[in-house]
Amino acid sequence: MKLITSISTTGAAALLLLLLTGCVGGSPDDGNVPTAVDEQTAPPVDSTLAPERDAVIVVAGVDVDGQNVTVSSYIAGILESGGECVYSFVGLSAETSVAASGEPDRSVTSCGTSQVPIDQFTKGTWEITMSYTALDGTVTTSLPTALEIP
Image (cartoon, rainbow, N blue to C red; front, top):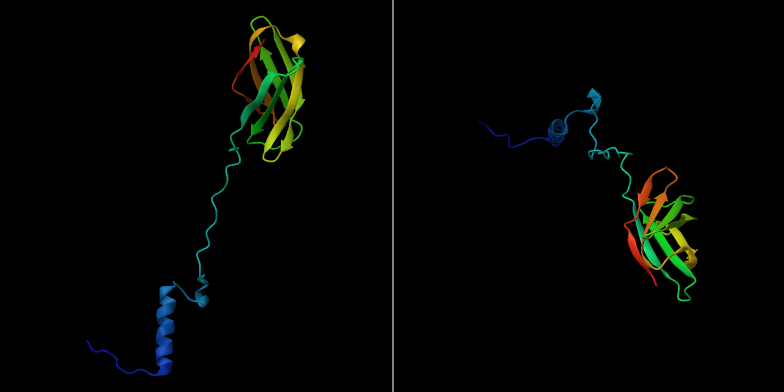
């Protein structure tokens, strides 16, 4: 095999162009114009997947003055105004509830603070849950929280 040891400048440029054209898979004349960077597209987002929602009771207790039971909560994973928060209080022989409106607060929906007069409760242990009904109809319920009424 014989190696070419001398080549003109024009010939070298033509050879280089020919080699490079072959490396990128085509020339502008054949309609296959190579791009410098492969364009990648993000995979499609499944719109049925929503962030997980979590209802959390923050405060549940008898006020210092003994006149009311105060509760507050929030819902993580949703930020909206106008959903409904319902606190359910279940005792041994009675049940009561109070509703509030959900409002956006930083990155969560807050149910604010609600108060229920203490005369709606009997002495003993009560279980509190909060259920939030979002504007889209989804209901998220907190884990139960125990409350002792003295």
